[in-house]
Length: 327
Image 1: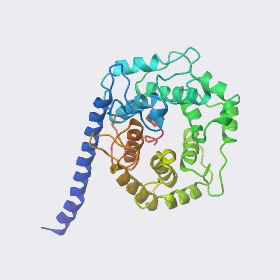
Image 2: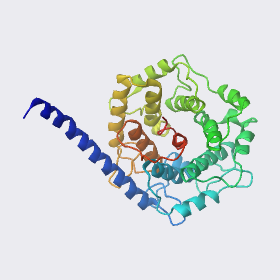
Image 3: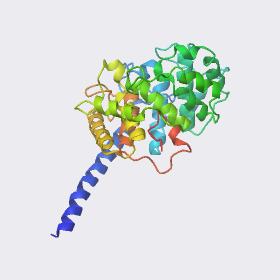
Image 4: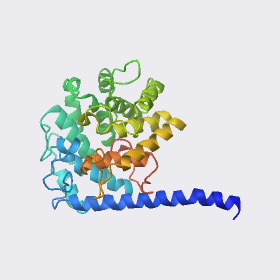
């Protein structure tokens, strides 16, 4: 056999294996969807009916619904009960524009709950090519009067995302107010944590502005990656989304840097270790499958090039989810 033929074979076989592995992941995701779908169009956090969820899916049952919509929009699939899912979302909106969940730990009347549920609902409606019955932006305008100062640091990019989903620009005063809460340390990080830093980078991407201290952010992000490929550095409740957050920053601040590409592939390997027999993903290896983990881990696989989105993505697909489809 000629050397050129051997070389092509060596390159082609791993590509086929990767593609086959990707197809297996996608089939598993479809099976997980069917196993968690409820008759009213909503979704359980996981396969077990008694499982209450972790992180976002425990926080609000808008999370499993929205993440199911976003994943299905990413790959061009239809939901098991798509019409009922749309009805479920629309019926959750109040006349003041806010959306409310039917189960979850966050107070739906709090500023935090109103911002979270309303942003998630707008995301899901975008994925289903629909719009809310009432204008949702007054919810955010009300929070910007004073309550924004007390929101968690991971809330920053909710605001420009919600405005863009509604087809409006973030008001200049709101931008200035939000930026006053986003204070970078000398290493570029916010709140000494990857999640707060990710939301600041995501915030800048949504407004198409350059993130300050980007090189320093990359330096720390690369330094913090563990030998197993993850960024699980703190108690699990704090770092459940850390891998996604870090990979987004590596991709969008690191460009074509080889060290960033290698780190993303190591992250994708760790994500695959979180996959379960039911086709879903847990937040960490051995953790039960959860729609929250499914969304964020699938997002890593998309950003790392392990999974390929549909050619027929919805318009402005980069507004779906937390940036896995950002150009």
